[in-house]
Image (tube, rainbow, N blue to C red):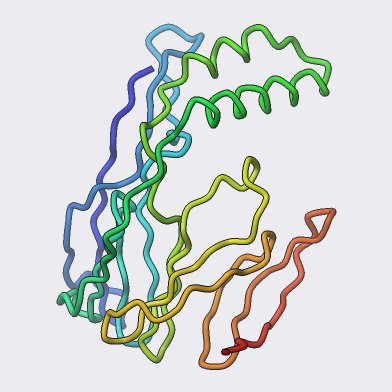
Length: 214
């Protein structure tokens, strides 16, 4: 298995749909290639727990981060940098217990489905796991300049609420917020947030929740 990292550009279009400009390249998603059973063919898949860029847009522009560290850049609609959001906070190490728990999860899933587990166990034990988790996994920008950034967590290994850091319009960290584990944040307003809640059967339910400040 050969890990590698893709790149991407941010492309700007005019209101009539014509190409206007672009910026980049930026570090993209970490991936890996592995030989397939077909001669001279390779599988190309995202790397588990690999770095993955995030982007959130709003009326004033957009926020872009690569998840390599706790920093993101705010841009206006023309791609001009406005501010850098940053924290002196390191990324978590991918430990042996994380790797072992994931191998056990994949083996248990195959066993429950009545499939052989020997090859599954070998594949995930030899998998090229990254040394660290991404710093964050999602960003949502509000029209009034707030930026909500979700700390990365392994949802199927860590059963806990999602943890968000909220940056003010001036770039300062202004709050930390916990949201229910199965709630997917989509929109942030001044007094409410909106998103999708998954019930016990993974049915999607749109919910609007109030922001309660102390």
